Amino acid sequence: MAELIKQDQKDRQDLMAFRDAKLYMNIKRRDKIHQKRVKELVSQNQLYSADDYYNAALIMQHSSEPMDYALAHVLAIIAAQKGKNKSLLLIADTFDRLLLNVKQPQIFGSQYFGKQNQPFCVEEPYDKNVLTDEIRKFFDVPDPQKTLESLNQMYNIQKNEINSNDRSVKKNDTKALQ
Image (tube, rainbow, N blue to C red; front, side):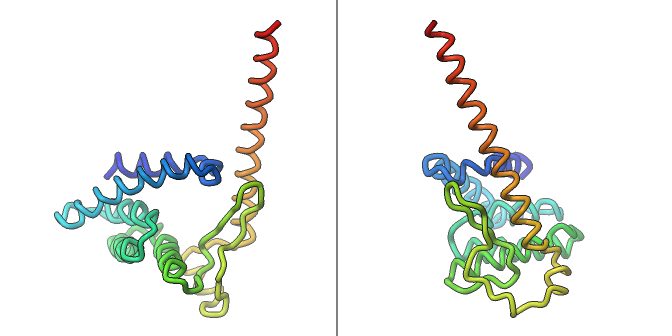
């Protein structure tokens, strides 16, 4: 599990990759491999610790299939039952992803979306009235406005780094031509 989650999380460090079709397809291809392995481990009863269940849930929530989201949700619940408090947010995340995938509004407001060169926003549909803010806090769901600010700040930093690298490459190319 340790190597699977390491690879999974490495794919998610670059927010720009999710806005580039080719890079995104490569991430999804690797996700499918990781998810297949998690399903094998689950079917062989090879998950033991709270961390195993948490990491397996985290990998499965990166699917695009309703039953994979359902499995992720159950694995996150088990991780929480085994003492992984960090799993409460993952329970909310997996439930919202499942709801959105079956064309229902998310209820925790834990899922965000960002189109190329546009700011991130809470993914719609989102029914804010099903749960209270107190319930969302119980599940450690962060304030949506703060999350959006953080996502957009990270995206802008990464975008600026890429733009800076492009300028320095062009500057070096010009020097090489002289």
